[in-house]
Length: 277
Image (cartoon, rainbow, N blue to C red):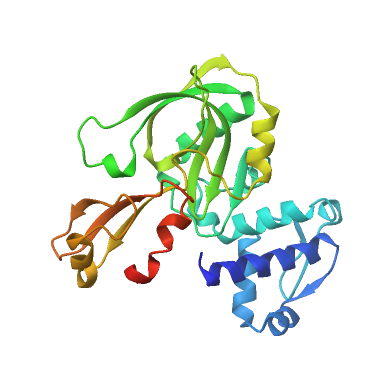
């Protein structure tokens, strides 16, 4: 997670909290308080332009009709979106406010760019709201270079979730196993929203909404990483990572690796980070 983005999100949350409390904020005083340049604070307010301001310029104040309605959790979520709004699909005033609902969960502030998939993103969100089954093809990262490697799924979608910058569709498979799974959004193709409705499992929904560490199958126990040419020889000589596989060798000598932790989740992989870095 980027320290810079963390600071921006924290600063935005602080500013939004004060605006929500009805304060009239002075740009110069904010710059001094946060020990940043005045232009930085101005950029912050540009990020918050979605808000309904009664006053802008040197001073900023929300209109009275929009004061006091945001809770702490909503403010944090709002700040995270404002921090990365250019990376989200077609983010306008309506989109921004809609994304404060429970169908999208934000956990982290470093986001992959999914603008090109905006239509698919909205279709999945619509299916979540209407509790409609979705069908799609899914290709795991380690198999993306293989022909005919995708697998077809029918899913009861519960949430669009961003974990450490990567968007996931979290739900329950619509088969006899009814597995709780998380699918990387950018690896999903050929999405179809069916007309078939499903009954929400409140226990599953509550877990996804409240838990900051999702350990559904295929989410955090597998990683793909790129290794620089300077150290690639160590990984070619022997497997330094759990279940290590070489996916691709680059022309400059670098490697693209896949690793999977059978136990302990992603921590079982990253205890080796000293070797990589």
